[in-house]
Amino acid sequence: MSEKIDRITVDMNAARLPEDLEKYKAKAMQLGATRATIVSIKEIPVDERIVLKCQIPRCFGYGTSVHCPPHTLKPAELRDILTGFQWAVFFTLDVPPEVIVRDRGTIKEREAAYRKIFDIVGEIESMAFYDGHYLAFGFAAGSCRHTFCSQQESCQAMEGKRCRISLRSRPSMEAVGIDVYKMATATGWDIYPIGSNAKPEEISKGTLAGIIIIQ
Image (cartoon, rainbow, N blue to C red; front, side):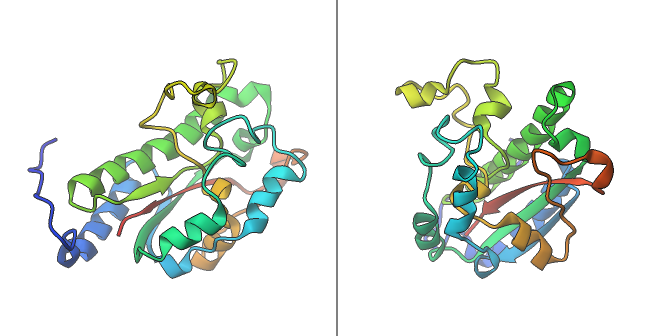
């Protein structure tokens, strides 16, 4: 790393937090996000009904990864954890709608788009850690199982083995109950629903989102 790593302080460099949040917001844009903003933890809607959508109808990724329901963090657990935090950086990435619609012809483009979300989250989470905000953590978009290990027969971590991509894998926002549609809309950003029978030509754009809880 080019910058000197600061020592840990009891308040996790709280006085510098506003400056750091702006830095992380700018970094998200630098790494390719379409838009990014600083949000209060109170602006993060956590709702059990979001996880229900993973079950009814059953998502192809349900139960196939340690970071997908029902194996990952529950909404009630996240809601309780968030009471100890105040600020986060929320960002979205616009992609062509045909990339989100599940079609074999766009597998490479789809995986690349989702990987970008994971990479942005991981990079900013790491920055925050070395800046002294050592409790920072983030959520990405989609299933890490199908984004990184689609050519593998199973999620290795589900078998009690080490995750193949342990430092990159993490749950999606939806997997832990965050209402991304509501959050993006409340932020003033356009977002469109893209389901299994969606027609790309009828949708203005696709949107993927990620969030890093800082302090």
